[in-house]
Length: 66
Image 1 (cartoon, rainbow, N blue to C red):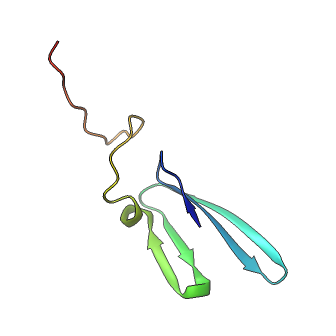
Image 2 (image 1 turned 90 degrees about the vertical axis):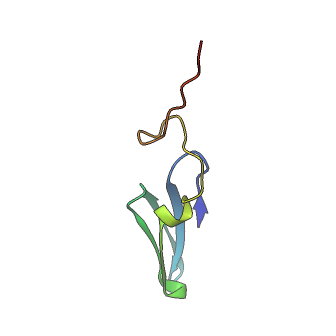
């Protein structure tokens, strides 16, 4: 699994027999499922302490006096 630094998105690689499967999971309401270890990881938890990005519609905008 890799997690993006600019947005709430993870790329997950899982093995299915002799094949590798690729899945993209995006959004703070999404959950990464890791069946090999019996875990489910909400992206909201992964990005809980990450600062908001300018593209984040829920980001707080700080006003600067001119």
